[in-house]
Amino acid sequence: MTSVPHPPLHQIPTELAAVSDYEARAPLHMTANAWAYMAGGAADELTLNDNCAAFSRQKLRNRVLGDLRGGNTRLSLFGQDFEHPIFVAPVAYQKLVHPEGELATVLAASAARAGMVLSTQSSTLLEQVAQQAQTPLWFQLYIQPDRDFTQQLVQRAEAAGYQALVVTVDAPVNGLRNREQRAGFSLPTGIEAVNLKGMRSLNQPTTHIGSPALMGTPLLEYATRWEDIRWLRQQTQLPILLKGILHPEDARRALEEGADGLIVSNHGGRTLDTLPATLDALPAVATAVGGRIPLLMDGGIRRGTDVFKALALGADAVLVGRPYIFALATAGALGVAHMLHLLRAELEVTMAFTGCRTLEDIGPHCLW
Image (cartoon, rainbow, N blue to C red; front, side, top):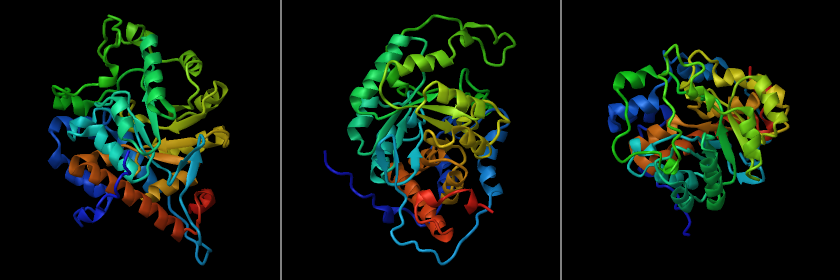
């Protein structure tokens, strides 16, 4: 396979100077249907907005005249080496915003040397994404009621070269996404969760979310439980990360169950509204983990200073979701590569101003 060319970032319009500029432009390149799905959150979207606001509540403490020679942003997770701690989060149905979908994203992630997590509900086959990747890939997994199919998914991911499994654990049911409801969201013809083709239907009735008859219905009978994590541990040797941890007790239970890593996440504000911002939840989870396993977080990252603050409060790395989707819609692979470049450059500038030569130098002492 030929090497990934360095993206011609000089071709990006000068007015696209920050991640937020892509969010402002993206609606011009997306259908109202796609925008409602990608940009929206649960209910009144309080958690969605607080994810970003939480970063503005944290102030930085600068340092001067330090020795920054040989500085870098490198880290290692599960024996895998990364040039920087900014990962591409799993986002479903990326062909909603660009015809190349996940293939454009993985090309950009490879060029930007960013680790990428592919969604179970990818609109591109996991094998096709892996063939184009020149960066470490992890596979995000929803444990399906069809255990045989789930086992096959895991085997496919292993065979394709994915190096970790990210199990989303915070969505036993769909969130109440009023913005999607108002837009009448539906998947267009030709866009589907292609990795889930062939999954056996359980032929169980579906209860409408919001109905008072939700509890006790078959919908919750098949929600993922701790015993499912133990079952998965028996199916694979890959590292298993649990995504969607906010409570320190769940973090401690995950350690007991043998999780290899955790991701502090509130699902981008898309499940239960008025959950805390992930940055606010991060310190308590970090204390519970105590550095025994890698800890990542997502939700609200829009600046390199945000990445820095997350690391200062206990994360080893961060994942970004909506920012790269907005960049993908606006400028395809080039936009995603540029967005990742912006975040990394801003992180490096922040490290220089705070006297941090490496990621190991970043800690709570860097916050005011």
